[in-house]
Length: 330
Image 1 (tube, rainbow, N blue to C red):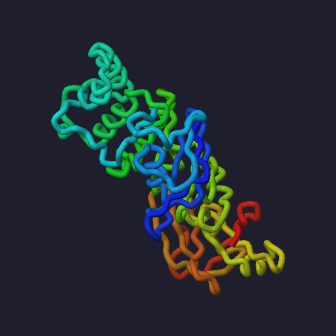
Image 2 (image 1 turned 90 degrees about the vertical axis):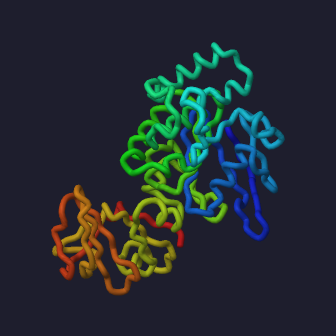
Image 3 (image 1 turned 90 degrees about the horizontal axis):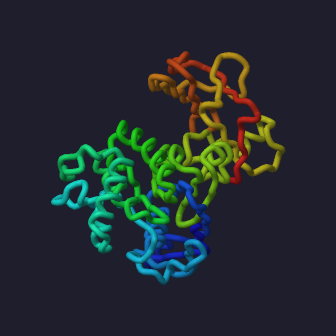
């Protein structure tokens, strides 16, 4: 549905986007994931029409978007700050865009009522934003965005203002809402957990370039390069010489060896590497163990269910199944 081809954008000496190409399908929940300054918000603003690329094309259903002003695009952008009108009720905030379009009052009331039911805000329709919780304000902003029935909804860090528990609830709510209304969602986030829990596919950006586009499970299990391996979730990234020494790759290989912490076994039996426990952290349902190994700059991290069974200072062996090790280009 949305095709981005060869898009580049520079701000002075800074190249925010460098030849970015993406295809986003109709009805898809798509995430742009990356660290601050990677270009994801610039790309979102280009899609919305608030920024023009230096080169490249953006089409929606085959039609050129770049020549269309923001208010004429079948696209809505939900801002990180929500940008609600403090003097208007929930109902009037949601219906504001429809009123500006000059729709009949009866049509506005019907559509606003439908959306209030969808987001579960019927009981607070007459309240002002300051009388709502953070999660409720987020729902109002969402309702205002979807009531206009855009082909595409852009969300810029939509959950960053919420506390951890409300954010987890809203992740479920966002996914449900997207399926229910059938609108294509594109979300910008630096939060890997948020992207992994929400998106059908994720594009990982770094320094203005797309490093990998894949569904969450593939992105986690088969990172395309060192950046993705280190950015998406925790990972142990071992140098090529260690992989060669362990007999996992032939001599001369320059690829890095990556192993997820949950796939690392720690014990005093036979193991791949010998090291000393540097730290243990109990998270409630699981424990994180850091093991220092001579010759490695970073400790090996292991995650196991339950409380730690080793102590700081213990000499242990760490190992993993060969099929759990993934090679990535150095």
